Length: 85
Image (cartoon, rainbow, N blue to C red):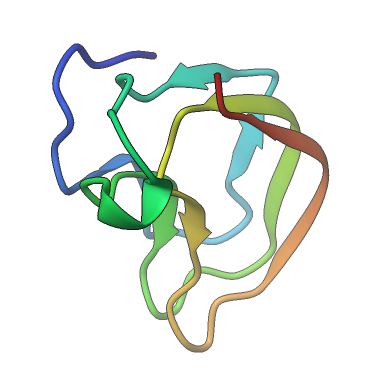
């Protein structure tokens, strides 16, 4: 997944239970300057009641935030990487 322009939204939104995000490469657009000034784009966001989310073997490029977990969400994740070029 990729975007040519920085939008202040997530690439994936998770709202259910027992969802999986596996083996993806997600590319945020290049943003100039220090990352503290970037548009806040995210790899994925959970809704408040998403439970048992499995996130494995994903690579995230040039995102301001990899993930935002809303309260009461639970997850199991491993082998995820963030790359800033």
